[in-house]
Length: 51
Image (cartoon, rainbow, N blue to C red; front, side, top):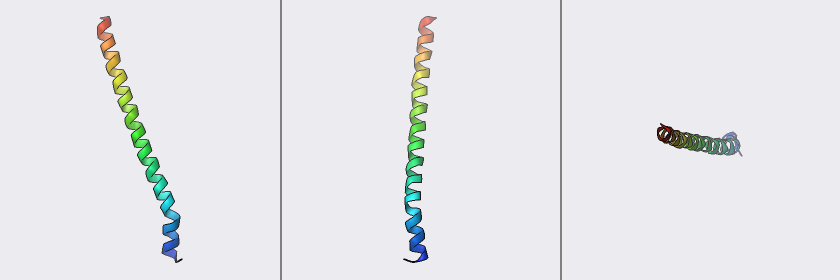
């Protein structure tokens, strides 16, 4: 196993988990924004019903 092979072997899981974490975080933030948007719309409608 040469230097390049060793580097690739070492960095592959790091890259994989980093990518996975990045995707998970972006999906999580999208869900959060989506949820906040829904709550905002519901609050807006509720506020108008109270008026």
